[in-house]
Image (tube, rainbow over all chains, first blue to last red; front, side):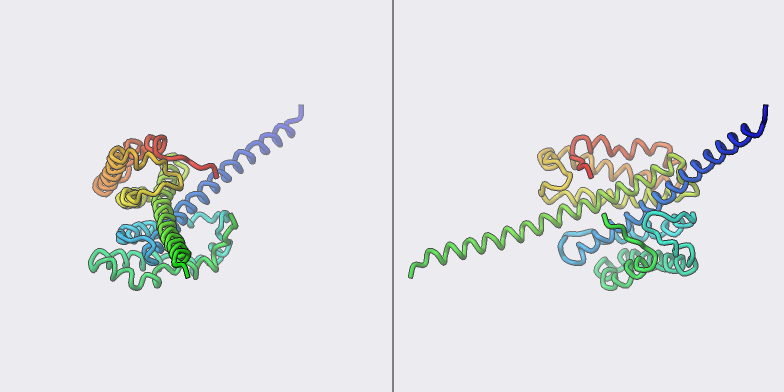
Length: 147
Length: 147
């Protein structure tokens, strides 16, 4: 009885199990960051409705806080070097730039939330377009899928 | 010259303008509450990934805070009595029950966020399924569209 085929089979099995494990982790990592970015998208859209006057009697401060909180978790969600979803490979190829911008976004949104708390939401919303500069990064790092 | 046709035209025009205005406002109200509920959905899903162990090295406290913040804005988003989206008419027909449950959800999630801050996230996550009882309300008040 030759041991070789069994070894090959065991190796193939082990490889399959390992790939599956890696694949499952990758899928989770992609999904997790999508939950974060979708949250930012939903909260920015709600804030956008307030800014445009479509929704009145509003609570912009809560939205600003939710954005600041979520932004603070965003960079970590991209740390696993797992292409997929709408993230372009440049996220990891140009990590220094990506992480600098994401950190800046987290800082700016945190600052806006602080201004809202201390000076009121109108003050915070006055320069909000300097905070929510989503497009400038998305143009470089996001490959928006057509749904 | 008969004034009647002009009056009819003016009336029709006024009605059209008013309906459009109401319609635009209704659409905005539906969209706004969808942004809120989608945020809760995304943040709960992120938390679910952490609870299941799919995502480690996590920041559950930030998610709990984001959920608590968003929950605190949710009831107001349903105040405009505008059916549409996935909200069943019972939201408004049974407003007392709906608002009681939504308020309870906001309180419970705020409490969980507080526990996370004071006693750590493990403590907060221990009873998290008593907080995120999304399904019990969705079964009654949400008509989930198949996407």
